[in-house]
Amino acid sequence: MRIADKTVTRAVLERHGFTFKKSFGQNFLTDTNILQKIVDTADIDRHVNVIEIGPGIGALTEFLAENAAEVMAFEIDDRLIPILADTLGRFDNVTVVNQDILKTDLQMQIQNFKNPDLPIKVVANLPYYITTPILMHLIESKIPFSEFVVMMQREVADRISAEPNTKAYGSLSIAVQYYMIAKVAFIVPSTVFVPAPNVDSAILKMVRREQPLVQVQDEDYLFRVSKAAFVHRRKTLWNNLTSHFGKSEEIKEKLEKALELADIQPSIRGEALSIPDFGRLADSLKEMEL
Image 1 (cartoon, rainbow, N blue to C red):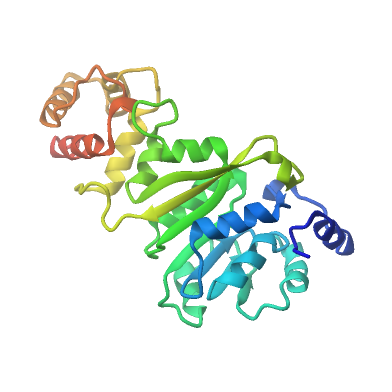
Image 2: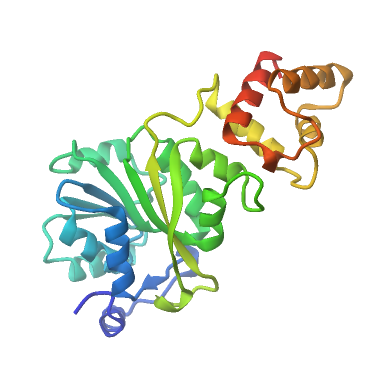
């Protein structure tokens, strides 16, 4: 019997007197077919180390441990540590770290893998309330994760993988796709969780690009400009840029020159710009010392 089997999950929770904490966004997956599909999507084998975030009672960890070289699972909730020791005790290739993934020294932690030189993949059912900060923290870290296969709220997955000229496309799409190729692998209905969340989830697969999608003078500046372009989605790029940089005649003149240099019409909306467009725009604005 698998940990994710509903009767096993229920028995584990009762045995340990565990109650769900909303503040940790805990929803435990109870569908073994979906867990197998996650592992297949991530293409996990004995030549891969895995980082998992929020293992819960170990439902996904069990599948990962059976396939990966090693699994390092980060769990913030102290109450789950003895439960994980109980459910995963038979595995000698699983390490549970009782730390917040946003505060741990990940560079140091991965040196604890028996073979830290193996490719590292992130496979996780991410807490909804903190999905974006965790993802951006990991993507922007200096650790060369080869791939992410992560479950999140369907709406967030759609935003991350969105193309230009769609409602979902925005600064989050740009921030992730600058580094990663992102695709929704499959949808996970809310009914397969305990407790059931209010929305469906999606498995998002992200593969790191060999090089960022565009070469820019300043990455942080690129992301700042892209955020500014989406502050008021229904406004033109020009209106958003003047709201962000200012409306003095000097600034307007610089903005006009920057847009001309980047070959971008001021009357379009941010959602019409591709990431290479934003790259040219950011470099042009930087040249104008804005």
